[in-house]
Image (cartoon, rainbow over all chains, first blue to last red; front, side, top):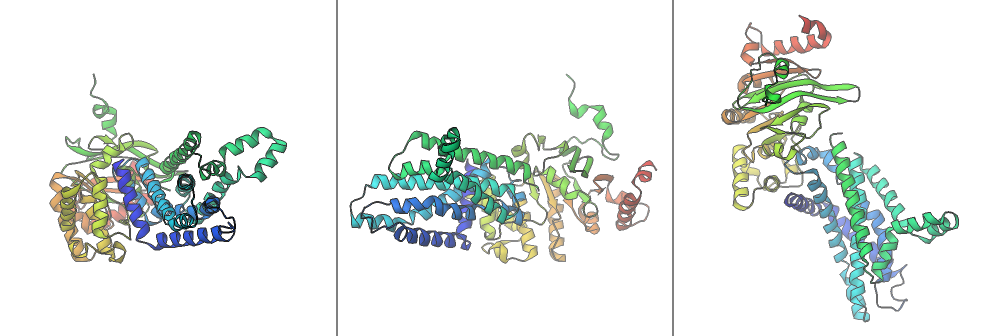
Amino acid sequence: MRAALTVAGRELAGYFSTPVAYVFIVIFLVLSGALTFTLGNFFARGQADLIPFFSFIPWLFLFLVPALTMRLWAEERRLGTIELLLTLPLPAWAAVLGKFLAAWVFCGIALALTFPLWLTVNILGEPDNGVILTGYLGCLLVAGAYLAIGAALSAATKNQVIAFVLAVAVCFLFVAAGSPIVTEFLSGRIPALAEAARALSVADRFNGFTRGVVALRDIVYFASFIGFFLFLNAVVLDHRKAD
Amino acid sequence: MPSGACGDPALADLRPAGDTPLADALIEIERLTKRFGAFTAVDDVSFTVGRGEVLGFLGPNGAGKSTTMRMLAGFMPPSAGTARICGADVVDQPVAAKRSLGFLPEGAPTYPEMSVTGFLRFCARIRGFRGAESCDRVAHAMALTQLEGVRLQPIETLSKGFKRRVGLAQALLHDPPVLVLDEPTDGLDPNQKHEVRALIGRMAPDKAIVISTHILEEVDAVCTRAIIIARGRVIVDAPPRELERDGRSLEQVFRDLTLGEGAAPVPAVAA
């Protein structure tokens, strides 16, 4: 665990010593703010909550998080540092977990920097801050799920563009699975699959959090989702590290 | 109970000539093989390296030197056979094996955005050193490789020679009993080459060291033993002096063996 935290610390410092961190954070803040106030009708709704902001998060992260993860292992391969990292005395899972944690903390920092929105609703009205908190927790869990997918795919290919496109596609599958278009299409034809698609959907679980509902089964869902893809990451890394 | 695989006479017979069993073997490579599809990069390589030995690993490009070293460092899983570092199997006990090993990968990769100190501190932390001990280790490794002058510079701003020395410092950090260095002097100027050779010479008595190199004079200068590998197979395993005994230069020996082997591998073995 100590080794994982050491790797995470190095990774996180690495984000901030390159322009990656600043570009990511600025773009995230600009886009999330712009979407909230324009498409989200933040003012016209006349309600003191952050629902307009939260509703865009799964879609915004759909593109931003794979941009973060595409370089996770591909960059180590390009620099050859993968050979250095994996010949240090640490188990492969520690390297996988460390990289994931660093990226996750980084997403947490980006989310925390949206605090002016929270200030705004508190100045304009009296929102339920508990619901806002669970909404942020949901955002963090969605980020974690996307990160786990993206990291595993980054380990599977040397090419960063391929890693990005595949990660967007797979994340999209998990978001879109619960959307009305997909579930209505499926329930008209194969009702059993519609239920399965909704159960697997990231967006559906996330909506619970934005309404202030923290269900144990949703937490278990995200935990096992992340755990599964990190495990996959370690397996893929072990098989393909030297390629 | 029989004494196990080590005392197995069948295995002892397979060791290349000139390799006497060592009481203090820190590196044991046993029938190591690596295949990439139909291509065999390393073919049934066995040797041991004991404390006090400096093994020069020679061979033409693509002969399998780096692949062998990567398998020894636990980076690449062997297709067959195994290797042990200080008794720890690189496949079954990878973390234990890596603890006893200082490895300089080919090209000396480092994280370019980190400072020299930051990078070495990171490696020291992964190796379990904390606080004052970590600082001492880093300072000592930087002193050995003469990096003090650039300690706070980002690695990407350094010259090739300095980068190589950062990689070397990382391998020496924990004073490991086994050192595996893939082209440690590549990219260094003659003075730096001399320094690194002197450093290897000073460390040699209490370590087992494997270096790969293209510079044959280096083998004369620092190695107590040379292995020449071609097309994945060990074709010579002898002290450098012995190779040059009949008045030929090491370069001539190298050319004769590796070119001859490439043209007609079977007669060379049969003869």
